[in-house]
Image 1 (cartoon, rainbow, N blue to C red):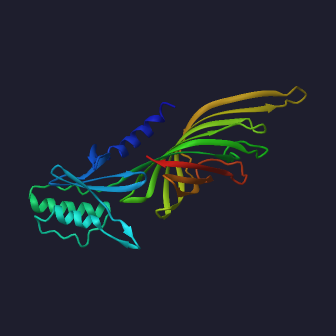
Image 2: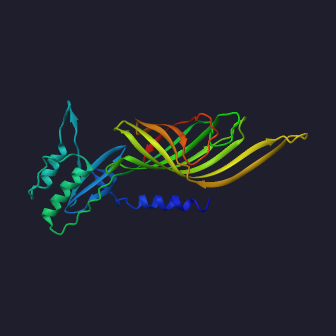
Amino acid sequence: MKPFLPHFVWLFLLFAGTLQAQQQYTVDGQTYTLNTEVDGELTLLWNTIDGKYRYFSKKGAQIEELKNTKQNGTYLEEYKVVLKQQTKDAAVSTEKVNLTLPSLHTFFAKYNKLKNPNFYEDSATIALQFRLGAFAGISNSIYTSNPTNAFQPVAGIDFELIDAVKLKRHAMVLQFKQTFESDEHKYSASQLSLNYRFKFVKTTKFDAFINAKFAAFTYSSREYTVIPFGGPAQVYTESGGDFNTPLTFGIGADVKVGKGFITFNYSDIVGLNVDSNSEFPIDLTLGYKFVL
């Protein structure tokens, strides 16, 4: 296991290294932990709170939330009123500003450049989001010797990383999956894997994706029986760990429910770098994940 863990550590440190600094702010008596997107005379703050994007504008010591309330089918665009008030000392227009991170970033940077020619704009706009979930289901373990094609219970956890601005259709997932032995198939496995997901359907309420598993460490144990010619049956047990690059593909979907998502996965349908036992693949799980 030692050679394998650094791969995950370095990859996730790379992603985590792009995170923006967070700080606590009090707005209207409520304390929030917010990211700084644009830092200047007019500062743009944001975070995902209860699964929703929230934006705040800070000028001097005053912080105001940027809102766009829908009333009787019409958006009130209160955020434009706030921005007009805070930027009345410069020639900037709020007419084409949308309540999204890239659009707000452009507006705040434009104002700050007008007020300070030395203002430096960091154009790397991102909105990293983490999701943590648990799942359970069944599998017939087609990438093992499973003579009776027996089903086995599986369970595990997913840690998903998404950039909701520039790479909203893409995600990286660190997954732990436990396969439990059944009465018919005395095989169990603990697997830690790194996965890439492409979301070919992406909406606020529903995602459908292709999952590619490209690196995995698996520690497995197998019990099997050998009946020698003319002798009594003998039971053997094998166990050990292995790091490989299986390159297996599956499909899945996330459905927004409450503050998280119900998630369905049909995993390991096709494997390009592993041997199967030629049975039809069944690896189905259902779970729930939260936005952190």
